[in-house]
Amino acid sequence: MAPEQTFYYEFPNGSVQQRVTTEADPQHPADARLLTLEDFNSRWQEIESTQQQNKADVQAQENTRAKDAYDALIAAGYTTNVAQTLSGYTGNTLRGDN
Image (tube, rainbow, N blue to C red; front, top):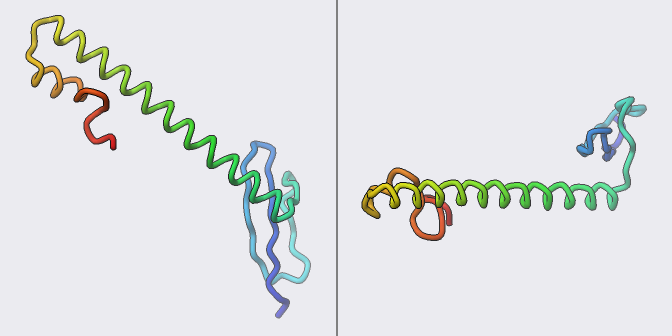
C-alpha cells in the first residue's frame, strides 16, 4: 500500500477541496488547479470570511425588514407586544438572534 498523500485543489467556481489518498498515481480532477497547503489554507480562510460576511449581511437585512414591519404595525395602532410578536422585532434584534 502506498503512503497517504494529501492534495489540495481549487475549482473554477472558487471552491476548494482537500483529498487524501493512498493511490500510487491518483487522478486529479480535470478542472481543478493543484494548490499548496498554504494556498489552500489562505483560500479556505477567504471563503470562511466571505461566508461570515454574507451571513451578517443577511441578518442585517432581516433585522431591517423586521424593524420596518414593527414600525408599520405600531403606526397602524398595534401595541408594542403585538407588533413584536408579529414582526419578530424585539428592540435591536430579531427574536432568536444573539
